[in-house]
Image (cartoon, rainbow, N blue to C red; front, side, top):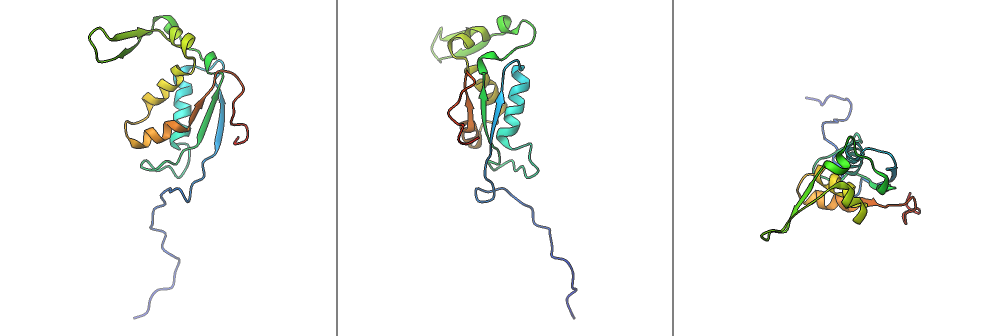
Length: 146
């Protein structure tokens, strides 16, 4: 019995690995953008969901540099009315802050917290969040990579 001559089998799935994926750098200007919509765009790029070869268990995303993080907008009265809670674990250790207070003290924390909340809670997300770089002004130290 002879074998059939034909095309090579393409039944193997392609998975991203460190050897096959070289991450790119993206710069996103946050000036005038809404927090949640910007965070979704950032997470999609960080995880690699905008690519055809997205693999959920591998880091297939790119680096993201966000500039002008202090000029982010929130819709409605959320800048003053929304409350972010944090708890230290001690009695009376619950603190509540508005986005306005957070931006005054640490302007990049609002976007970082929104992005971190959209990532899954696992080892991969801790690796992915390191690829997010957030800056308040329009200048950033990653010009050589971009």
